[in-house]
Image (cartoon, rainbow over all chains, first blue to last red):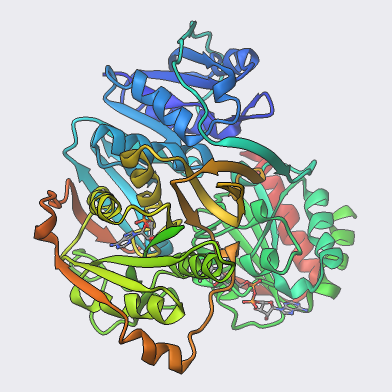
Length: 308
Length: 252
Ligand SMILES: Cc1cc2nc3c(=O)[nH]c(=O)nc-3n(C[C@H](O)[C@H](O)[C@H](O)COP(=O)(O)OP(=O)(O)OC[C@H]3O[C@@H](n4cnc5c(N)ncnc54)[C@H](O)[C@@H]3O)c2cc1C
Ligand SMILES: Nc1ncnc2c1ncn2[C@@H]1O[C@H](COP(=O)(O)O)[C@@H](O)[C@H]1O
């Protein structure tokens, strides 16, 4: 049976996570990639190039412009019948819509999948990643959200056929305003390098040091919850159990203690670098490379050293 | 309006859990338990709506073992009026929790149901969305701000790109994120008073809902250990180490 995968996109561009969840879903069956939204023809064309996609379905409607949970769940429910698996990324849209759909279909979903062992066997983290559950589902249909950072992206170079599906959906919630974080830096959840800062920076102005280092490295910026709560960084930069889960090749944590809720977000990092004045901080203990020092001295010197 | 708040008793968020050596689960014996942190934000939001004159009754409900009384009492001490414990032992999956909550909604007829965005034990992030689906109500998940506007709510949500503000008509489901508010610590007189507030204990069987788990947990394993690495002596060494990482990345 084929797998219905909901594509992630934003501002008219396919998100990097889509190729990753396609690669994961391909292990479950032939992939039908659904692009839902308004004015998404270009996104659909991009989607058709992902290797492993059998066909692209496009649901283009004003009611889907903001991809509200009500509209997306209704759309997926209409399309669900022939599919054995319905898959979305474990990100805002999927987290919001997949459980709603699951309730409508009376199916117990599996969310935040980090490994696929077969059509109905999956790993997912619990307790902020301090334990991994291996689940076997006997449900007739499998509804999944997948953690994109746990999978390698599919290649590109495909030319899958694109067809329109006519959704009978209406938006329920009234969209009032988007408050977007404007940044020219790479997208955090799929970035190859991430530089993250903690509350120890002491102000939003000084947190800009993290951004300076990130710019030097072509990295994305992350933050602890404490730094976000203090107003030094926007909420969408939060890394951790309740923020974004990242798996960069290189993570540099500066002035971050390494609370278990923060570590939950970086367990998939290949290399961890930590800078902290306290050698006993938990992040320092698990770091591959650690430097004890005052961040206000270290970071400017490091930026200069990297530019040399 | 009348508000229903769902609260779960979980292993305290500060406890680092241990996986049992036989892989059957995590050790929960003699471990500190408390109200799921996000549910505290949900209770606080309800109490604040009450204090602002928007809510006249706040009912809290929890599904779990007898000891879940504790978290209901905490919510009552924070200012909720009445509690319901649906007593159930063993693992109750999110879909069954949502169905039990729907049954309570059918009885209580609240205008708003507040939940936490996720329970920090199973980290599911499902129940609020499921309850909204079962009831066919609008949902506003991951809320960091709730305003009463006209007959409905304006909710600001934390999303991947930042924040989004939406308007929902009542009745509705809202799930709380941590930045929604700072939950109060109930003062001792409130804790004493909570004991005299009504708390109904009802066996799960009374609801006639099938709560048998549909997913089989085959095993629970610890995550891969990170052994730690080397400590460097200077910023120059750090710059060199990062440069060598970068050239390795380019080679990949
Ligand atoms: C339910 C729940 C969910 C949570 N979710 C998340 C989450 O998703 N993400 C998250 O990050 N947190 C989360 N938290 C919060 C988490 O528990 C910690 O409070 C938080 O991560 C700490 O942030 P921090 O490291 O910036 O601050 P602190 O823990 O205060 O650490 C500051 C560190 O900076 C160091 N330092 C201070 N000054 C300097 C200096 N001049 N130079 C160098 N080092 C210095 C100190 O030695 C210390 O190690 C959550 C908490 C709860 C209860
Ligand atoms: N057993 C339970 N009893 C009461 N409320 C619950 C229970 N399980 C989950 N909830 C509510 O649903 C929210 C989301 O939980 P979950 O989907 O399990 O991550 C929690 O924050 C609670 O508000």
